[in-house]
Image 1 (cartoon, helix red, strand yellow):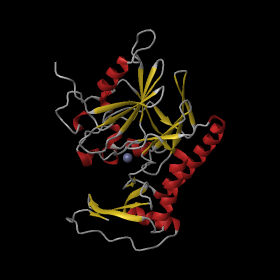
Image 2: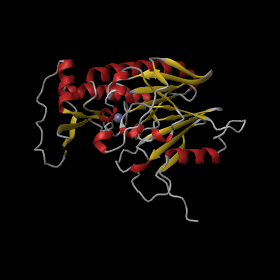
Image 3: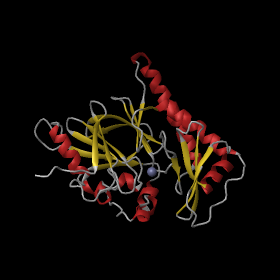
Length: 322
Ligand SMILES: [Zn+2]
């Protein structure tokens, strides 16, 4: 029998959590997390879906089947009574590369930010960018709309997770704090090396407030952990799965204001979907923002900064890398 090839990779992060990365055709390389409980399985985001594997000839394209085979091999798929564990899905925000695999879990209970139910319920096809990338928009019922600082339970089981509403990148962006493992699941709010995307549906003032909220939250957690020698670490929606959250969020906050002042380094300019998109990074180029010019100007106006944002390139011009 030929060896199975797969669109996914599997890494153990800690005693309860695994990281799955999809090697997708859209080059998002989404980080998807699986947290194991005695009777439940939590999936944080679902990737781009089975029709978007970079190599369409791989034999395993289903995220569900991939994860369930891995968990089965480790004896963690079934409850002690031999029953299949119940899937719960937490969506860090409803962008296409986070919801694309949802339809593989019709039996899962879905948890989504309750900050703006309108955003999720109306025009999800365009808000998710599924319509831009030709991805079928998943249809789902929300089991629970998450609230700010909610300590989460499910049918009497303490999930040891707290939901944090962190609008900015999108209105429905959340973070989750895992009390047991000191992990901060940051969705698309915090990254190292790649810029945070500020796009059509992002709100600059909300992003700034959420950054302050995340910094206060993580500083308080780190203070509680002081005697243990542990620190809160970030598991983001892409690229980052072990950064010190407090340090990273502070760097991003500094870069946010430097960018609004026109003092960050312009590293790339391109036209995407007719929009003038500018990428600014900090001096060490480890954090930054990729912003639509209108959103950059919205933030500058809100915080009282004024300078000449680069004019759009001609529509057919290639991206300029600086
Ligand atoms: Zn996103």
